[in-house]
Length: 326
Ligand SMILES: Cc1ncc(C[n+]2csc(CCOP(=O)(O)OP(=O)(O)O)c2C)c(N)n1
Ligand code: SF4
Ligand SMILES: [Mg+2]
Image (cartoon, rainbow, N blue to C red):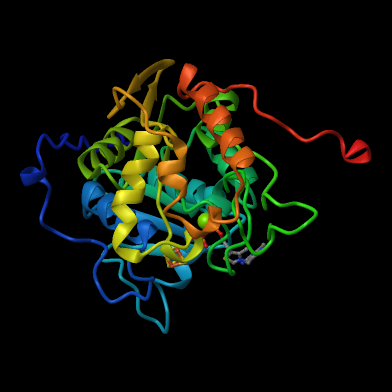
């Protein structure tokens, strides 16, 4: 007889003092001082707890964490190719469903969590992520967004902001602003194309309780879920490593990052400032924007102003003309 699949119900955290003390992402890794992705990993692992399996596609959160046969993961973790984390997560989840149904695994279905960079989720890893969501696997896909292909030397990715200086978008006489394109919108990609997904949220390392509760809500939902987590990267964004949380907060205070949840078609916003600061306040602390001229900053401000009219909902963004006419 088939056995019903038991799923977890993780309680929401009301106050900082209720955050579990146990760590499942422990010290001893080799990420840079002030690494935003490492901070979010610690928070996600705490929120998810011991009954968790992480899938880690290639990127800083694999390479800088797992070196010389040592890892900081105190729960099962598996490396995947940068291209296929969604496919591996699908296989892990499907295997547990079968084991439980056949009575060969007596516990609850583990939390299956993909911890992918922006490259491993909405660029090189997009097809596998989309497949996992399309087929409706019970897994959480996290895009920890440091807005670059950081591990291979800070190359531009589809979430790198307009105007950023990366190793593939160096500013120069021909293109003074560095990156010309505006970023992709990962949550909207997921919401727009995947009817099986019922919960999507954005989060930030600046608001740990909000982040952890979004992890728990996503894990409590049966089916595929998606979190987009803003993670400042001192090396790639060129800022002092003690300012990671300050920069993350400024992103929200200037409208460069919007915190929201999308649940069954409804939007809810969190930590929305009463008044937004100019984007310049956020940009001036980061060396990746140091070359920008007034006109470029004004273009960024106009983009953010348009986004804030309908936060979380796609807006028309400036796109370059077809290449032949450029
Ligand atoms: C198919 C493939 N292409 C390129 C690479 C090289 N590569 C390894 S890590 C990486 C950067 C990944 O960027 P992201 O997913 O954003 O994670 P981050 O390093 O920023 O944490 C790249 C391009 C690879 N491993 N596999
Ligand atoms: S390059 Fe950025 S993301 Fe990678 S370990 Fe350093 S701070 Fe973290
Ligand atoms: Mg990245």
